[in-house]
Image (cartoon, rainbow, N blue to C red; front, side, top):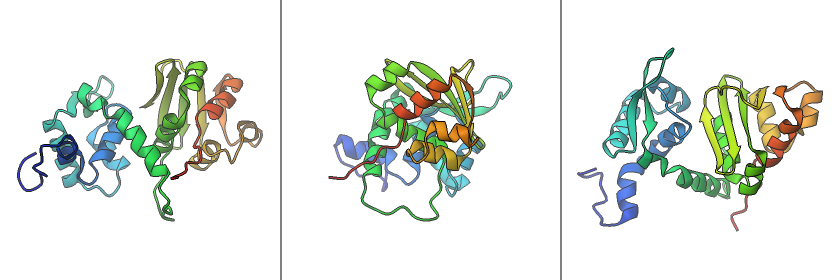
Length: 221
């Protein structure tokens, strides 16, 4: 980036912020961290960004080789964007920023938007590597109109958008129930008992999943 928007400092952090420091940019990267997304998908996930701003942010990220345009395979056959190998290096940074944000001693706005995918990324960041490796499974999660998957193995936890082929477990529920399970306010067994969740696959894996992946209380101290 050049011109008045640049910090014009020979500092790695300043150079990174020249590209990533604008409003919405890191949230665009967050969405693409789950896999290729079409322009309209990004607009839907980032309510309030506006078409002109999204176009500008994508242009900046593409110019910096953080993202690239791709053509989705059939049946979609649509233009989309994905992280480059260079952009994928931001994955661990995103995870650490999310954990840092959860520890902020600030109240959450009553009208704050919530999505299961955002919670799931935080859950993956909080999971212990040894527990993730022991799970060794792929879980598809359907929450209202969101479809996501988590692959857990000895290389870590990977969260992606869209359906998986042959998952070990499929979980189907609503956002309120998913949030309660994620925060430990509702046990997996109770959610099955009250029929708030539909599970296809190993029910023991369902319980194990929410033992490994959950929103843990974070302290700023």
